[in-house]
Image (cartoon, rainbow, N blue to C red; front, top):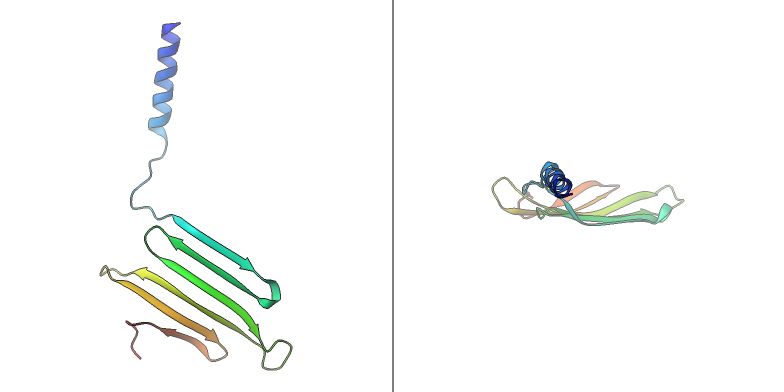
Length: 106
C-alpha cells in the first residue's frame, strides 16, 4: 500500500513539473470589451499586461445620404523600444486617418 502511495505522489510531482511554465515576458490580456451596436456602430478596447492599450469607437455618420461615412475615433498606448510610453489619439473619417501624439511631427 505504501508503494502505491509513493508511486502516486511521484506521478503527481511529474505531472506538475511537466506543465508549461509561464514566461515572465509573456504578455496577457488584462481587460477586454467589445460592443457591436450593429449598423449604428461599435465600441471596443483592451489592455495588456505590458501596458499596451487601445480604445476605439466607430459610428455611421449621415446614414442614408450621399455623404454617409464611417467615423472611427480612438487611441492606443504602447511602450517604445526606448522604454518611453507613447500615446496616439486618432480620427479616421471621410478626410482620412488623422493621428495625433506628442511624438508625431505636425
